[in-house]
Length: 67
Image (cartoon, rainbow, N blue to C red; front, top):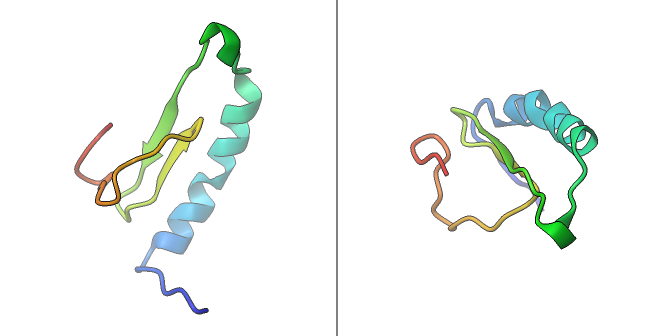
């Protein structure tokens, strides 16, 4: 299966990849006591990263709809 990405998406993924590692190391999640901090970033290319993971609508567009 070949997946074609829009221009700039591969670069945006690479640029934001390190954020997830930083987010995971910076604060532990204590779900039992609901001590959760959500972090997210959306790029002009449409890449959207959020930690911890959440469901977003299929047609969610991070370039126009901050969550």
